[in-house]
Image 1 (cartoon, one colour):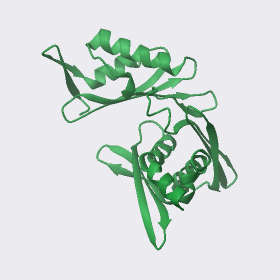
Image 2 (cartoon, rainbow, N blue to C red):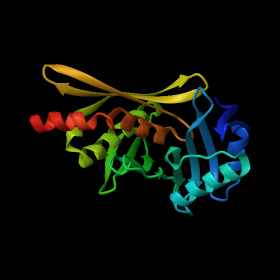
Image 3 (tube, rainbow, N blue to C red):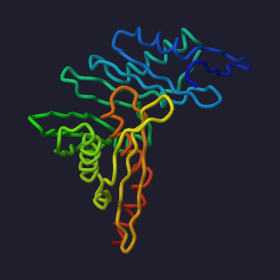
Image 4 (spheres, helix red, strand yellow):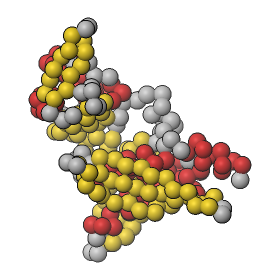
Length: 235
């Protein structure tokens, strides 16, 4: 629900316009764009914030919580707020609020791309609470090739963080339209002789399709890597 939503506060229902909330949050000095996603019942479940790199992401999350509570009575859980910070060179640095789960799962650190002639090189840096690795891929500058290159670079970084990901390869990666949104859909393949198994992941494009491709790969792998690790150990 994008236009309006509601939350229950002490037995009362508080109605608010999500577009109005987004506009108010965009008034924060370091925030350039905000997208709030609500469930079918109108409760916010995701808050995506695009910000400059001048302030720590944790402070931006606290600022977002404070404005939402003070202006609209909306008590946002910090765990649903994610912040993507853009550096001066245009690289995206994603800094989601940390939870016990997010410190062990790979998270986006930076996504960068450079073009020279008819070739494009991309690099994706993923990090956990203990390590940080960068993956690379190179290919055609064709727009249709870019999602696959980003998916391959993401897998390259993931393999360095988790050996079990070595068995994964990119089958397809593309941007498609779903309702009012662009959505990245990624299909990965792993071979378990004599069978092939596929893993799928998706992510809504909010500001940058590049970032969404990386999130789609992580969506396909994060919940399944423990099983792949067990299979890897048995092999």
